[in-house]
Length: 93
Image (cartoon, rainbow, N blue to C red; front, side, top):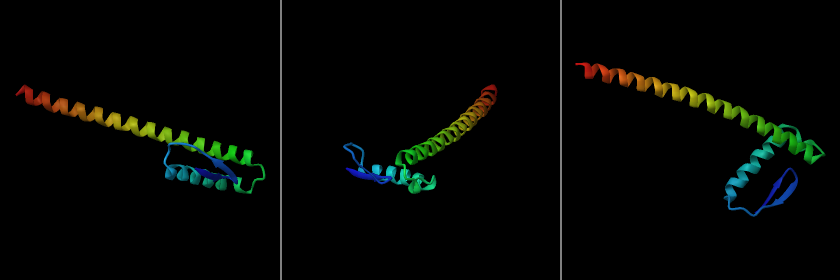
């Protein structure tokens, strides 16, 4: 498959679906544009800025996911404790 990212043509041989690669290229192109990379003469510098911005977003998303997982775990633990409490009252009768 042939893709163009930041004025650079890439020829890839991969088992990934074409649609997935096109989506990835779209994300990178959007990040290049938002970081001013589309106007930069130095493509390597522009790509590095886009990569850093994407990495920053990834780290932030991982943090949000971790918080959600923690809250979900705490909610499940509390629900199990309530069920155990209810069962112990039924068993006590």
